[in-house]
Image (tube, rainbow, N blue to C red; front, side):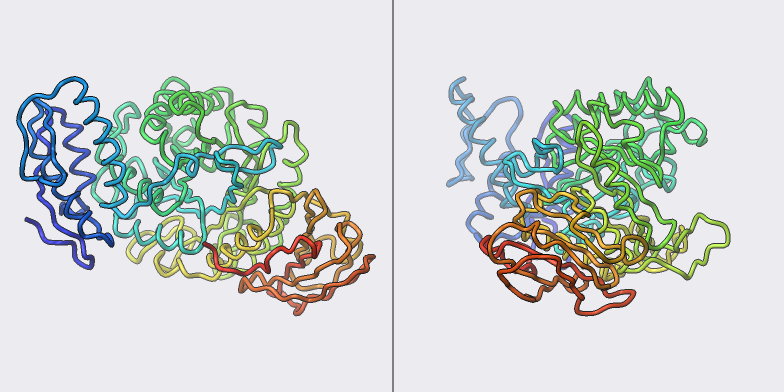
Length: 556
């Protein structure tokens, strides 16, 4: 019997594989029960009796011959009755095993039993934000992990995903056929995604690794923003094209069948835009294959080349559920709120967000000639992009770090001057501060927010200090963002209620300070608590009668 995995209190179990005649059943059992070292384990739970019972059940099911069904006693696992079962008992046992299997998923692998509504998303009725199937608003807070499937092993993926879940991210953006030689170089276990680079021949071993990461993310309450491929694999002039209008739909069906019941958001494109009708038809065929195989139960968007907008190519496409823009990495103080403003005015309305803003630690304007590789975006830049975009009408936001998207480690080629191991970059300040963004917005019914620049009567209207504002459509509260702590004047009369509560929220540390509550309203000038290049502040004005909590409580 193999020993428990190093560093865990996993319980070893018998490693006998089910005697199934189907090789796919045997392979799936081996994948689910073994870690990457080939060891079979059960994750510890608080109830040792449940562990023992589940372990016995697994061993007995593994030992049972496939030629006939047996009645297995959970309380007396050593007794296996060998008589054939009646049809009615067979149906009863099948239902019971389905229930037991669902419970064992939680008991054995430490994964919560997630209700269907928690990993199904839809667009809100007004077309402005995303929500879960039960109607709960869903705040899209993405992290850019393009090379996650391709470069990390399972232990590394566990570490990365657990960190992002702790910090409050809700979506992990990763690519199946990734940018950095993702078709020609193997993953951490030596597996290529395709056999002979043939899209019709997916490599089962590679996709079992993708399965593991998707399942791990689901256990942590995360969605995978899954890109079927990077754009170079469908661009005809890239020299790498393997996806076209004749095979794209089949590839979409394959992915949809495999991940259609998982918490996945589909992101087509992959940092490229269609240049001709053939490329457009390839993208549309891929989308059609996904919609057909998932029953249109998962959302689809498009990640364009930056600076760019999905709405410029596919806004009226029926398969495009929400918009995505890439404001890119050209300059500091680039107002990505302009992209959100554009999409907000389109008809029909669709939610929109920045899927690739300026990354923390990436050189400013890296694609321009004579760029300075030592001048890099910092946490203040990523905060500014987040608040500018959200207050201009975005339904969420994506963070990126130059060292993390490529999962850089010493010894790997450095892309765009990456020089910090990804596992150290996990704790860069911008990543923590994205959690503070979510904390603020979820402390209020943010789904009511609408852009409201007219409330800003005076103050910076352009440039680095530009004030952006949004107000709840019922007038219950409003948010104002000052990137540099500069003075500004607002129209308080746009907030309903007899008493007005004023709060300062610090985006750097996720804490709030009650400034004042009064019973008069008019044109009021506010001076943030501090000012300067890295001293951004959010002003909250709200109807005191709403009794909203002070933002800053720890996320659940």
